[in-house]
Length: 403
Image 1 (tube, rainbow, N blue to C red):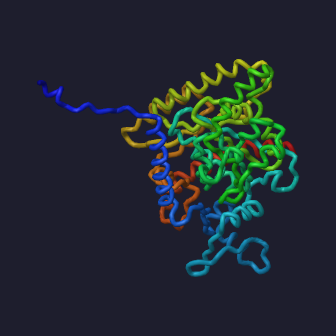
Image 2: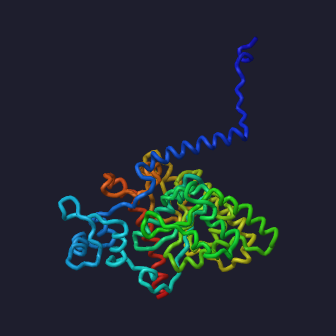
Image 3: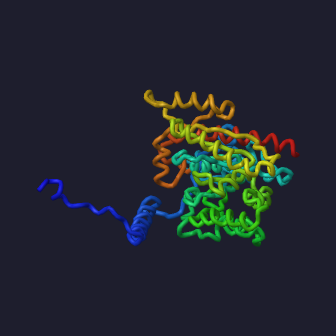
């Protein structure tokens, strides 16, 4: 008898019942890990800002902020004294008050009370997993609020990662009635999309969260097309977001890493598009596939959307490795050849802070200077703020013209 015939045969079959059992077991493990990640409190907390940080965000001298906060009869937030007493810490809400009232940043019609211009819808899209799409969506939202803007993020990914970054436990705190899904099913629903908006831990930032049930849209929309051939399945989200433009300076859409019906709705609802791209060969090839697929599908309804234009399309290189053995320089040259002026000059470097932040369901904007990693955080936060400034400046010009 051969040795091979004496070896036991390993049964690798997996039944549906086992998968159900496995899913329950893993869900329990996930809850335990979540408790560890977010300990000691399940809710996220916004960072605090030093006088120097407030001054930098406002474009003013530190002494000016100190004077404004300490002068007799001031109506501005005074912050909380710490250390020797000459230094102050400000909450996020207090910091945004300074930005809106005393900074050199042009304030939007929403803040000044003369809302003559609509808020803009920005889509963050990429088909490649690990492209930092969701993290970029959250960082854009946070960075824009630090310019005094009011921002709504809409999570269209059934994985609900953006909702988690907003401090919402999707599986426990959200059901399908708390997402865009009811509006997808029935556009006459009372309150429209405004009825499912939730506030977050971050001042100036609201969210329409996601839930795994969003997959339902991928069955409902094609079914409606069969019932009603003239049904504009791609325009539902655009219709639902229209009233919200008067309430927010920016509406940021985060989609699933696939060309789903919801992603198509987001593509047609957006005024502009940001594609974060990790400079690696497979990511570059995936980005090219994105445009090819979008073009093929859009051709079916392009005759009905002849006036559709994007204010801009922007490629943002993210997780850039500047090491000597990195392939980033080569791939960057490919991206430059393919995308030309769409490629933004700002680049977000790879950093362990981003990786560690992901473990804590956080971004670099969630970390206070007092946490002791100021230089490392600033290395990533600064280019993100530069990108937010670039994006915001484009729309400031439109707001000025609308005045």
